Length: 387
Image 1 (cartoon, helix red, strand yellow):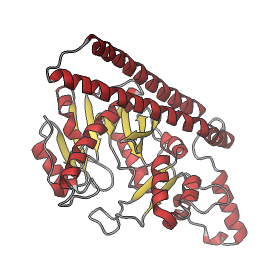
Image 2 (tube, helix red, strand yellow):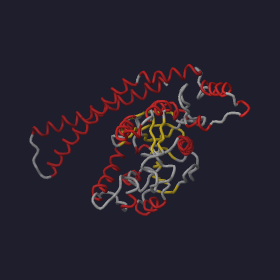
Image 3 (cartoon, helix red, strand yellow):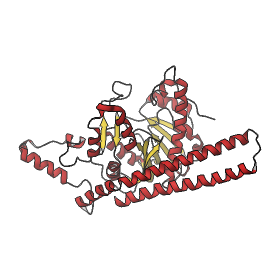
Image 4 (cartoon, one colour):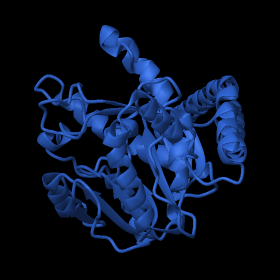
């Protein structure tokens, strides 16, 4: 049985908008994408050898009106489910209609009301796609705090595919976006469609370069996998592990020499006593050459890491194309199997040739899924090793 459907005013906050002419289509899309997101998370966890059922306690961070968590009721037999969001009305609906999980309202900025090391798994869809760098750093640290050592955090970002799509549709408005994204690794667009909407003033549109995620988020978590277009075939999924021990809070990545200031540099100040152009240049050079994080190789190691990530970009692009082809083959095979099962459910007798095809397709799906998991694991292992 499908889970209960929220009222249109709540669905409207997480979709393109509900109108009289498209209401049924939007409601169906709300159900379909929620169910698909659960499958996406399962596949992402499969890339690191885990399943949703393997976690005793699970939190959806930014659950909204239950688009995803509503489909997790079967997990309640095996684990404690929790959901949190800043939207009080959405949380009130979830608490009333989805009694198999516990829900709470979280503030716009940390901390949340959960104790340290509360959850084995924390996941979300499309939260870090709307926060600036300062908010992201705060929430990364907070998610680390509430996740148990050895626990998993699954987040999504607007990666290269999403950026290419938005850039192409934005025309002249996108001037300079790509340069900023390639320079800083993160692009926060404040002048977007969310201006003047019902969303909070800090809620806008954010894009991430994969190298930024590995370099910047890797200071707070161990990055187990980066999966392009794994979230609803649009957003990239990042699988993180909360390792034991302390890690320093992430510091914003700085711009390259000669580039415009990154958000972190814009917040920096210069000592008035060193107000000359030479002193400012010296201060800028000192900030630029300072190591971003502790490494036994120091600055050369950091530069080598950046170079490796950029050199392997053509290869990772090829692997992404392979992943998409494998995923499409799996979808095609599953559709054929579903059609056969439907025919059987309607009472049609299975001819021997159909039975043989069914068995071959099942074996094909297993091989394709194994190949896909292997490719993702190899990519994640190589990036982790090169980093």
